[in-house]
Image 1 (cartoon, rainbow, N blue to C red):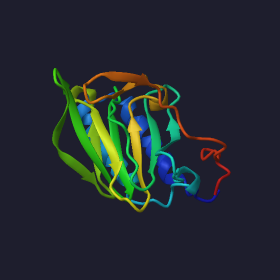
Image 2 (cartoon, one colour; image 1 turned 30 degrees about the vertical axis):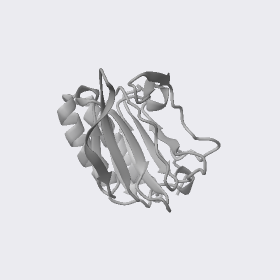
Image 3 (cartoon, one colour; image 1 turned 120 degrees about the vertical axis):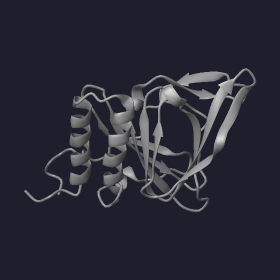
Image 4 (spheres, helix red, strand yellow; image 1 turned 30 degrees about the horizontal axis):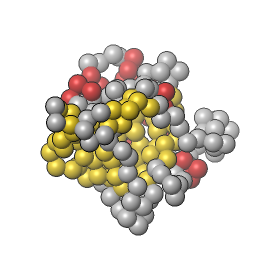
Length: 196
């Protein structure tokens, strides 16, 4: 059988599952997971065009892999020009790896006065990885850094993120719960080993 274009993703998933099997403490998991994700995003030839398609209305969240035991998921986020998320949380650990273009991430914390920005915005360029953890605060807003082109990042979360109940936040600190789901519709099964 010829090597599949999806082999880098398959290898990443296998290596990440083995990392979780070793049950490391979260700091070790995020450190070693960062190295695995950096290796995956060193090239973008493996990402099928169907999972890199932007929408004119809002950013797209395509499921690339969900672990059968719900331990982690891998998602491509596709940002059309100038698109951004609302301020939101994750409630699980996460890694964000920049594949194409650039993103800007602004962290927030909630206090008695509402939401407050924490630190300067972080700009992610191709090859950069940002870590998220509820233990350290995981409320942020993410934006495409470019007003005129698409940006794509690969996210790894410590659950099937499309099924996790989490929240978006208003400026006064109040929250509205949501479950994001995914934008996959009639996309190819990249796990079919007949794909070349």
